[in-house]
Amino acid sequence: MKYVYLVIAAVVFVIALLFIRTSLPEIKEAELVDDKKQDIKPLMSHSNFTGAVIAQFFYVAAQVGIAAFFINYCTEASTTISNAKASYFLFVSLLLFTLGRFAGTALMKRIAPNVLLTVYSIINIILLTFVVAAEGTFTVYFLMAVFFFESIMFPTIFALGVKNLGHNTKKGASFIIMSIAGGAFMPYVMGMLSEKNTAHAYIIPLFCFVIVAWYGWKGYKATGTKAAD
Image (cartoon, rainbow, N blue to C red):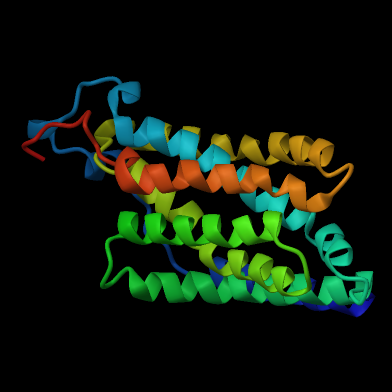
Protein backbone atom coordinates (compact mmCIF):
# COMPACT_ATOMS: atom_id res chain seq x y z
CA MET A 1 0.00 0.00 0.00
CA LYS A 2 2.89 2.37 0.76
CA TYR A 3 3.90 2.33 -2.91
CA VAL A 4 0.55 3.82 -3.90
CA TYR A 5 1.20 6.84 -1.68
CA LEU A 6 4.73 7.17 -3.05
CA VAL A 7 3.34 7.31 -6.58
CA ILE A 8 0.73 9.89 -5.50
CA ALA A 9 3.48 12.00 -3.95
CA ALA A 10 5.54 11.74 -7.15
CA VAL A 11 2.60 12.85 -9.31
CA VAL A 12 1.90 15.83 -7.02
CA PHE A 13 5.60 16.75 -7.11
CA VAL A 14 5.66 16.70 -10.93
CA ILE A 15 2.52 18.86 -11.12
CA ALA A 16 4.06 21.32 -8.64
CA LEU A 17 7.19 21.57 -10.80
CA LEU A 18 5.05 22.31 -13.85
CA PHE A 19 3.34 25.17 -12.01
CA ILE A 20 6.67 26.55 -10.78
CA ARG A 21 8.14 26.54 -14.29
CA THR A 22 5.05 28.16 -15.81
CA SER A 23 5.56 31.86 -16.39
CA LEU A 24 2.57 33.86 -15.17
CA PRO A 25 2.23 37.57 -15.95
CA GLU A 26 2.08 39.97 -13.00
CA ILE A 27 -1.22 41.79 -12.91
CA LYS A 28 -0.80 45.42 -11.86
CA GLU A 29 -3.54 47.52 -10.30
CA ALA A 30 -3.47 49.96 -13.22
CA GLU A 31 -4.22 47.13 -15.63
CA LEU A 32 -7.34 46.13 -13.71
CA VAL A 33 -9.07 49.48 -13.87
CA ASP A 34 -9.91 51.91 -16.60
CA ASP A 35 -10.03 55.35 -14.93
CA LYS A 36 -12.99 56.32 -17.08
CA LYS A 37 -14.95 53.26 -15.97
CA GLN A 38 -13.69 52.86 -12.44
CA ASP A 39 -16.24 50.99 -10.36
CA ILE A 40 -16.76 52.90 -7.11
CA LYS A 41 -19.29 50.42 -5.70
CA PRO A 42 -18.29 48.43 -2.61
CA LEU A 43 -16.97 44.92 -3.09
CA MET A 44 -19.95 43.26 -1.43
CA SER A 45 -22.34 44.81 -3.95
CA HIS A 46 -20.95 42.52 -6.67
CA SER A 47 -23.27 39.50 -6.62
CA ASN A 48 -20.91 37.36 -8.69
CA PHE A 49 -18.26 37.86 -5.99
CA THR A 50 -20.47 37.14 -2.98
CA GLY A 51 -21.90 34.11 -4.76
CA ALA A 52 -18.38 32.88 -5.51
CA VAL A 53 -17.38 33.06 -1.84
CA ILE A 54 -20.39 30.91 -0.93
CA ALA A 55 -19.92 28.48 -3.83
CA GLN A 56 -16.19 28.09 -3.18
CA PHE A 57 -16.83 27.40 0.52
CA PHE A 58 -19.18 24.55 -0.33
CA TYR A 59 -17.10 23.24 -3.24
CA VAL A 60 -13.95 22.88 -1.14
CA ALA A 61 -16.05 21.32 1.61
CA ALA A 62 -17.25 18.72 -0.90
CA GLN A 63 -13.81 18.10 -2.35
CA VAL A 64 -12.12 17.54 1.01
CA GLY A 65 -14.97 15.46 2.40
CA ILE A 66 -15.16 13.20 -0.64
CA ALA A 67 -11.45 12.40 -0.45
CA ALA A 68 -11.33 12.10 3.35
CA PHE A 69 -13.99 9.37 3.55
CA PHE A 70 -13.16 7.67 0.25
CA ILE A 71 -11.28 4.67 1.65
CA ASN A 72 -13.87 4.05 4.36
CA TYR A 73 -16.64 4.16 1.78
CA CYS A 74 -14.87 1.69 -0.50
CA THR A 75 -14.23 -0.89 2.23
CA GLU A 76 -17.84 -0.64 3.41
CA ALA A 77 -19.26 -0.84 -0.12
CA SER A 78 -17.78 -4.30 -0.72
CA THR A 79 -16.08 -6.93 1.43
CA THR A 80 -13.77 -7.64 -1.52
CA ILE A 81 -12.20 -4.18 -1.30
CA SER A 82 -9.29 -4.01 1.15
CA ASN A 83 -7.62 -0.84 2.40
CA ALA A 84 -4.82 -1.39 -0.11
CA LYS A 85 -7.25 -1.74 -3.01
CA ALA A 86 -9.19 1.30 -1.82
CA SER A 87 -5.93 3.28 -1.77
CA TYR A 88 -5.31 2.23 -5.36
CA PHE A 89 -8.81 3.42 -6.30
CA LEU A 90 -8.02 6.76 -4.64
CA PHE A 91 -4.86 7.03 -6.71
CA VAL A 92 -6.84 6.41 -9.90
CA SER A 93 -9.41 8.99 -8.75
CA LEU A 94 -6.68 11.60 -8.37
CA LEU A 95 -5.50 10.82 -11.88
CA LEU A 96 -9.08 11.32 -13.09
CA PHE A 97 -9.09 14.66 -11.30
CA THR A 98 -5.95 15.72 -13.17
CA LEU A 99 -7.29 14.51 -16.53
CA GLY A 100 -10.57 16.27 -15.83
CA ARG A 101 -8.79 19.58 -15.37
CA PHE A 102 -7.16 19.34 -18.81
CA ALA A 103 -10.35 18.07 -20.46
CA GLY A 104 -12.39 20.84 -18.85
CA THR A 105 -9.96 23.51 -20.03
CA ALA A 106 -10.32 22.21 -23.58
CA LEU A 107 -14.11 22.11 -23.35
CA MET A 108 -14.26 25.71 -22.15
CA LYS A 109 -13.01 26.81 -25.55
CA ARG A 110 -16.42 25.78 -26.87
CA ILE A 111 -18.65 25.87 -23.79
CA ALA A 112 -19.18 28.85 -21.47
CA PRO A 113 -17.47 28.28 -18.09
CA ASN A 114 -20.68 28.83 -16.09
CA VAL A 115 -22.54 26.32 -18.26
CA LEU A 116 -19.84 23.67 -17.84
CA LEU A 117 -19.78 24.37 -14.09
CA THR A 118 -23.54 23.83 -13.89
CA VAL A 119 -23.51 20.65 -16.00
CA TYR A 120 -20.61 19.12 -14.08
CA SER A 121 -22.30 19.95 -10.76
CA ILE A 122 -25.54 18.30 -11.84
CA ILE A 123 -23.63 15.21 -12.98
CA ASN A 124 -21.96 14.99 -9.56
CA ILE A 125 -25.33 15.38 -7.84
CA ILE A 126 -26.60 12.38 -9.83
CA LEU A 127 -23.46 10.34 -9.15
CA LEU A 128 -23.59 11.06 -5.42
CA THR A 129 -27.26 10.13 -5.30
CA PHE A 130 -26.25 6.61 -6.33
CA VAL A 131 -23.33 6.69 -3.88
CA VAL A 132 -25.72 7.50 -1.02
CA ALA A 133 -28.73 5.38 -1.98
CA ALA A 134 -27.38 2.38 -3.89
CA GLU A 135 -25.33 -0.60 -2.74
CA GLY A 136 -22.59 -2.63 -4.37
CA THR A 137 -19.09 -2.33 -5.77
CA PHE A 138 -20.29 -0.32 -8.79
CA THR A 139 -21.04 2.66 -6.51
CA VAL A 140 -17.31 3.00 -5.90
CA TYR A 141 -16.85 3.73 -9.60
CA PHE A 142 -19.53 6.42 -9.40
CA LEU A 143 -17.63 8.00 -6.53
CA MET A 144 -14.40 7.87 -8.51
CA ALA A 145 -16.11 9.63 -11.43
CA VAL A 146 -16.99 12.53 -9.12
CA PHE A 147 -13.27 13.43 -8.99
CA PHE A 148 -13.24 13.94 -12.76
CA PHE A 149 -16.24 16.26 -12.81
CA GLU A 150 -15.22 18.31 -9.77
CA SER A 151 -11.79 19.10 -11.21
CA ILE A 152 -12.67 22.36 -12.99
CA MET A 153 -14.78 23.84 -10.22
CA PHE A 154 -12.26 25.71 -8.06
CA PRO A 155 -10.61 27.75 -10.85
CA THR A 156 -13.93 28.30 -12.63
CA ILE A 157 -15.67 29.65 -9.52
CA PHE A 158 -12.63 31.83 -8.83
CA ALA A 159 -12.54 33.30 -12.34
CA LEU A 160 -16.28 34.01 -12.39
CA GLY A 161 -16.06 35.54 -8.92
CA VAL A 162 -13.36 38.10 -9.71
CA LYS A 163 -14.80 39.10 -13.06
CA ASN A 164 -15.50 42.84 -13.39
CA LEU A 165 -14.38 43.67 -9.85
CA GLY A 166 -12.07 46.43 -11.12
CA HIS A 167 -9.96 47.92 -8.33
CA ASN A 168 -11.51 45.39 -5.92
CA THR A 169 -10.05 42.43 -7.80
CA LYS A 170 -7.16 41.69 -5.44
CA LYS A 171 -9.28 42.04 -2.33
CA GLY A 172 -12.05 39.93 -3.85
CA ALA A 173 -9.58 37.22 -4.85
CA SER A 174 -8.31 37.09 -1.26
CA PHE A 175 -11.81 36.52 0.13
CA ILE A 176 -12.53 33.76 -2.39
CA ILE A 177 -9.29 32.02 -1.46
CA MET A 178 -10.14 32.28 2.25
CA SER A 179 -13.46 30.56 1.62
CA ILE A 180 -11.55 27.27 1.37
CA ALA A 181 -12.26 27.16 5.10
CA GLY A 182 -15.25 25.05 4.11
CA GLY A 183 -12.83 22.15 3.85
CA ALA A 184 -12.27 22.33 7.59
CA PHE A 185 -15.90 22.34 8.68
CA MET A 186 -17.81 19.88 6.48
CA PRO A 187 -15.66 16.76 7.11
CA TYR A 188 -16.55 17.12 10.78
CA VAL A 189 -20.24 17.01 9.91
CA MET A 190 -19.62 14.07 7.58
CA GLY A 191 -17.83 12.29 10.38
CA MET A 192 -20.91 12.48 12.58
CA LEU A 193 -23.12 11.13 9.80
CA SER A 194 -20.70 8.31 8.99
CA GLU A 195 -20.83 6.70 12.43
CA LYS A 196 -23.39 4.13 11.26
CA ASN A 197 -22.82 4.18 7.51
CA THR A 198 -20.21 6.14 5.53
CA ALA A 199 -22.56 6.32 2.54
CA HIS A 200 -24.91 8.57 4.54
CA ALA A 201 -22.09 11.09 4.99
CA TYR A 202 -22.01 11.74 1.25
CA ILE A 203 -25.33 13.56 1.54
CA ILE A 204 -23.20 16.56 2.59
CA PRO A 205 -21.11 16.87 -0.63
CA LEU A 206 -24.29 16.16 -2.62
CA PHE A 207 -25.85 19.24 -1.01
CA CYS A 208 -22.63 21.22 -1.61
CA PHE A 209 -22.81 20.54 -5.35
CA VAL A 210 -26.38 21.84 -5.36
CA ILE A 211 -24.96 25.20 -4.20
CA VAL A 212 -22.25 25.08 -6.87
CA ALA A 213 -24.85 24.26 -9.54
CA TRP A 214 -26.88 27.28 -8.43
CA TYR A 215 -23.82 29.50 -8.80
CA GLY A 216 -23.13 28.26 -12.32
CA TRP A 217 -26.78 28.73 -13.25
CA LYS A 218 -27.58 32.13 -11.73
CA GLY A 219 -25.19 33.13 -8.98
CA TYR A 220 -22.29 34.01 -11.31
CA LYS A 221 -24.16 36.94 -12.89
CA ALA A 222 -22.46 40.24 -12.10
CA THR A 223 -25.44 42.39 -11.20
CA GLY A 224 -23.34 44.81 -9.22
CA THR A 225 -21.38 46.20 -12.18
CA LYS A 226 -22.14 48.86 -14.73
CA ALA A 227 -23.96 47.88 -17.88
CA ALA A 228 -21.43 49.88 -19.86
CA ASP A 229 -18.80 47.26 -19.12
